Image (cartoon, rainbow, N blue to C red; front, side, top):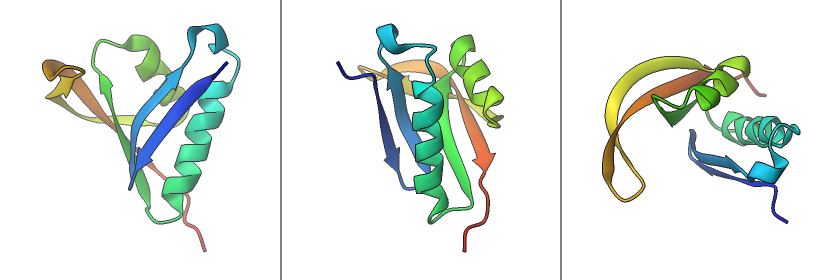
Length: 95
């Protein structure tokens, strides 16, 4: 069984998904940390978008040092307009 997946493009975490059977076992935190490490190789900060009403996801990211930066109307799956929050995190300087 696949526990989760992470998709990173440039300095943005495009998606982070954990299978419900694998939730609350640390997989999300490990995938997020891995994505942050990948981004930190070339960028000083990371970004991601989260649905404004997804309190669990927002709490998860905030617990890992991410901060809400901006609210906007984005497109959810199927090109459906949805309220989103841009979150950012400054990453440690490498090198």
